[in-house]
Length: 414
Image (cartoon, rainbow, N blue to C red; front, top):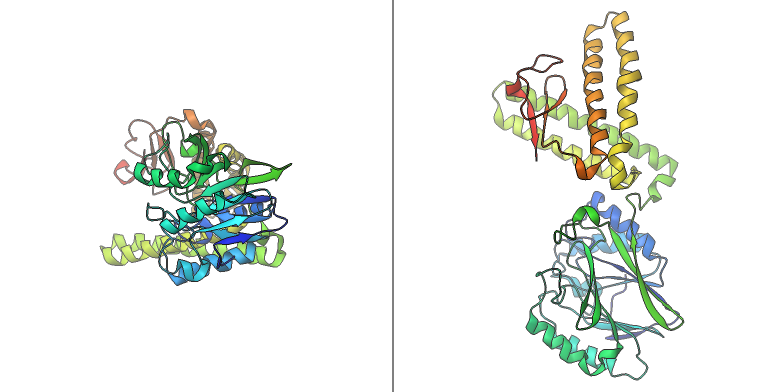
């Protein structure tokens, strides 16, 4: 990562720039950082990268050190940053100036700090200075928090935008794009006749912006700006769910990760079962502790598995689980259950029979859920005795597989 020490940086042989928005404001855990890792790999196709704010969840040296080390291990080009509202504290110690200009031969990016919802005067003066230069022809103005637009109210005030407009107004024809992050989604707009691109898809969980821009319709992404024939253009590149794969290519590490996931999930299960035992004995505090430990072990497993996972796209994923469920209840569990019964192992036989019945329900529900927009089951009941799954307006009095009473069912409602 580049620590900026000069307000104007002249770059040679730079014809493209990749833009990553909001990678770290929700935490720097492995599960979240996988998207950022994929974004950095994709952005390495460009000559340089700019992160438009919120590198970290909070501005302490610990978090800045983490994001700096992660970035330098993964980036394939020089990475610049601008300050977001989460990037407080020691930001300048790690990344240098908050207002600066990157001047390539055919385009210029002016980075302005508005993390506190105001543009700093030195930044606006720098913008005017750069725009007034005769050699400057195409400018991107980059900042974190959006200016007033047609999509969201989470933006700077009209007064602040007026200060920005005053700075660029004499040379407005040179301003080809405005670029921002902050909103964990993406949209494109026209502001004062200038294209505004809002990109917050570099790691943070995508959120609903409006009824027209829903989280389920937006992918994590980066923005590629490319100069060709003297003309500056852009395209938005959606990152796949399987956007990063470096660790999977190391056979030894892949095996160890798989073993670690299994160990963490086993610990998760053991702690949950002990929590059940503690609850049955009326020891609520002990049960609470082991529920917490079980949750921790699950999140560990999730982090390790996220490095290995090769998911299908979100809209295809629900249906992709059906074959596995069908194989379990049609063949695997039936075969092992029969073996257990023939060898006089009734508990194992019973467990496989009950699981097979549940897996069939899983497959049926997943088939319905593969049509995401029309899945209408609002309440799903799970028997905690055998794991059978039930749907409907109300639960049956007893589980049809094991006879467990409905008062014990777990209800999942939405």
